[in-house]
Amino acid sequence: MSESYEFVVVANRLPVDEVVADDGGRTWARSPGGLVSALQPIVRRQGGAWVGWTGQPGEAPEPFDADGMHLHPVALSAQDVERYYEGQSNSTIWPLFHDAVEQPAHRRPWRHAYDAVNRRFAEAAAQLAAPGGTVWVHDYQLMLVPAMLRDLRPDLQIGFFLHIPFPPVELFMQLPRRAELLRGLLGADLVGFQRPLAAQNFLQLTARLLGLEPQDEHVEHEGRTVVARAFPISIDVGEVEELATDPEVQAEARRMRAELGGDRRLLLGVDRLDYTKGIEQRLEAYGELLADGTVSNDDVVLVQVATPSRMRVQEYQELRARVEREVGRINGEFGAVGQAPVHYLFQSMNRAELVALYLAADVMVITPLRDGMNLVAKEYVVARGDDRGALVLSEFAGAAAELETAFLVNPHDVEDLKRVITEALHADDGEQAGRMRPMRTQVQQNDIDKWARDFLETLDSTGSTKPD
Ligand code: ADP
Ligand code: F6P
Image 1 (spheres, rainbow, N blue to C red):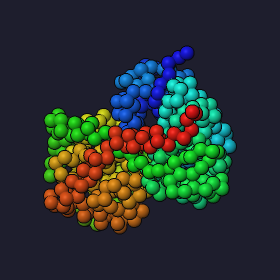
Image 2 (tube, rainbow, N blue to C red):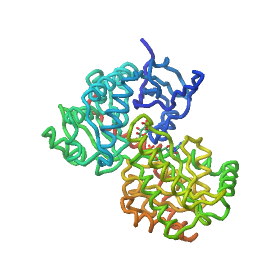
Image 3 (cartoon, protein in one colour):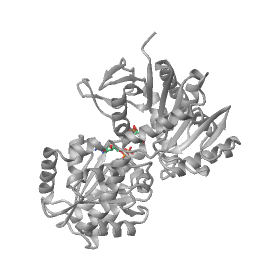
Image 4 (cartoon, helix red, strand yellow):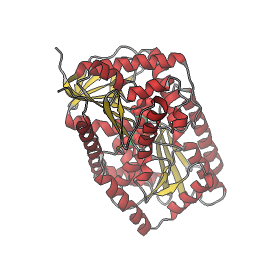
């Protein structure tokens, strides 16, 4: 029998992506997104297997060990990528779960591919997990996996965590085959969410769709108890602190500031290029502040890092075109030779460069229209051990519930954005420290290890399904 693991993580992506160069050579790079930032340190420390996709269509490479983790690639054909990943996951479920800020599309072949790929992930996990082991399934791409896995392996403890928001009942009800998705999630012993409201939405849905009778934080389903609770995800505090206090990273931050114009105040945006992140609203507000003279190109500069994401999906291509047009317009209208008001970087960065940017920024501007958590916000406050800087944070990011002393803003309201960004730019040292300190303490006391511990201990105590 092949090797088995007491702890298995199942996520759409592996922590590393396979990168194919023009000459056909293959290397590995860190995968994009908050899920990997959060989970990688946990699996690395605790050991175990990780089932996921390499980010490339075609045959899966052989399983391999890296950084104390056993990585088990699952193959997605080009058609699977188009239908399961770009289609059902990112053109149906993603927009619907983010308040339908883009119109969700519905296609039958996408749903069939979603079923088939979820089954493949469930089978891989069933093969790898040790008897009575723990399997932790992640995110909206794999919502059918818990029930499929339970059918295959009733001996397992199964947890599920949703990294994105869970929509209100009325929105979820729009999904074709909605009851199947819900039954998929109910295959888990514990379903975790970013916010208490999401857990409530889920429990209400079990009553509305399946006629179940949820009570407090749990619901009985097919003779088992399923617990639904919020576990706000966090960051690897130690990693960010180590980088932020590294003299080389600090020197890089000083160099960046000098190059951008030593006296100019630096506004920073760091997001995957995604329509949920409110990048266009941020640019609109900044453009208006320049136009009405509240700020000028001589005293302020915006650095916008936009990480390439889902670039084959039409809405993402259109967003990129709109964002780049707006950056060009602002630079054209308000720039000077050798001095642009927006520096736009459409690229991935290494962690040290990113933390150097956090250290250099006077104001971090995070304005999603809807976001499950937003780890960039937590990384920024932890990086600022110097108590300097200011965080402008959307009320619609999960992080706003914990980072209460941020400059909170409604990103749907451009006037509010302009007002709050201006306020943050004018905060004096005392106000900066008074706001940053409690936020930093909050994240330090609730780091990623605590998140994982809370979830896994709750799962362990739920474990009603274990046979005698
Ligand atoms: P999401 O999961 O929606 O992408 P989060 O803010 O929760 O958003 O997580 C993003 C993660 O990706 C953070 O850990 C952040 O440091 C990292 N990240 C964002 N942009 C880049 C980039 N350009 N290069 C490398 N890492 C990035
Ligand atoms: O939770 C956010 C998330 O969708 C993760 O599931 C995902 O790994 C990450 O963002 C990045 O997106 P993608 O894997 O589609 O590039």
